[in-house]
Image (cartoon, rainbow, N blue to C red):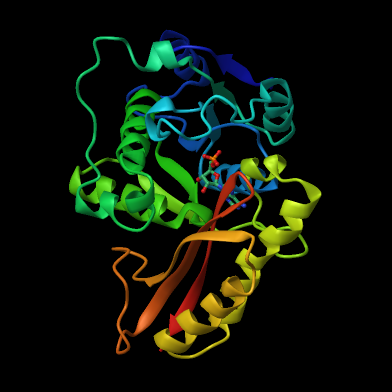
Length: 284
Ligand code: AMP
């Protein structure tokens, strides 16, 4: 079956009907993969996971203005819709929802989601309002698409944690699936923003994953932080925003006596490109 493209919210309602979802009793199940487009192998892996979980996969392609700060890259964010559609067709996606910003956010809009205190730490400290913007668009997408399952990448670990928090705190009837980070052979985490990188910057950017893997090879929180930081300090062209070792559910820094899985997360600017990455470490 060809991919159905819904370019606005009304189109989406019609497309859901075409797919035979939302009837009662419910017949077909839906999995949602929210994206900002410029699809790469990481997005493809999310789509494949989604296909295992439901009868139909819906991919949303929406560069969400609400989650960009005034000095961020909203206007230059890569937009490659025709190629994205080809990728979705090749991956067996049933429906692509690609609304305009005007359709999603009418000018009289007032109400949004607050990410709370957790939205102000780590990534939220460097991108004020970012996680509020993410949760607002994700809640809208959940309400519009009404998926049974939604798949998000561990690459954006705090975003994933906050979405799980929103689902729990607001009793949303959707299952959240986290998907592992897909990397280039040399360790660089795939990102739509990697296409901003010059050859030189791309080489520099490898220090991020190298720092994470070096840290993850150590045993205690202090050793992990110190080893990862030492790698980044050896790279004067990397402008570090943060390097943290946190509880994956709360994003609070873990202490020396912490036991369980922790996330070693980094954000840094390489040239004019801001990159984030993380790995999970097991602190037994
Ligand atoms: P984005 O289009 O960057 O907003 O990302 C859409 C979804 O793809 C999010 O859930 C991301 O966490 C996920 N994602 C981005 N990069 C990767 C990657 N390298 N591996 C796996 N998932 C990813």
